Figure 1 (cartoon, one colour):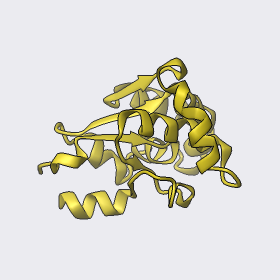
Figure 2 (cartoon, rainbow, N blue to C red):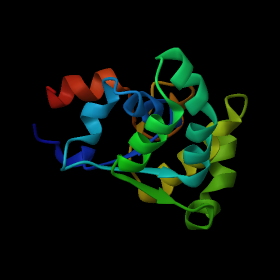
Figure 3 (tube, helix red, strand yellow):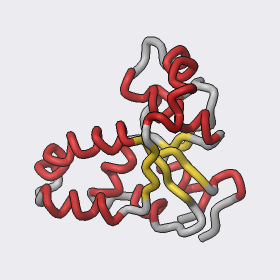
Figure 4 (tube, rainbow, N blue to C red):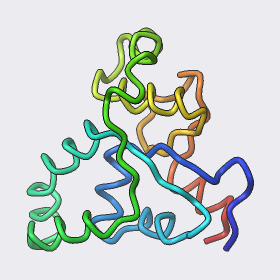
Length: 140
């Protein structure tokens, strides 16, 4: 399975990271070596907030999910790296989920697509890929 040139780096939203941690379809994207998956510290904190919910939903241990999270090949960016893009991202996300502003700012800074199953990123000025669309493109 080979990633196309414009899919070499993806900014991952919390929902796809949680899916991967739970062993769902998103995990297959993380296993493609040619794709670098990046996210923000904010999104990682959000993932950790929901580990208990996911553990309960799938009858898994929270400790196992935390271990799975640590094993994901994720590059985490601190806020200071992309903060100059936050005002522009906040404007684009106005009236939508405020929790998505930092990831959009990171995607804008790196000029990479967002990987999310959240429709709030539509018409945000960056390319958006859902897990299903990525798997279809990559024929995973």
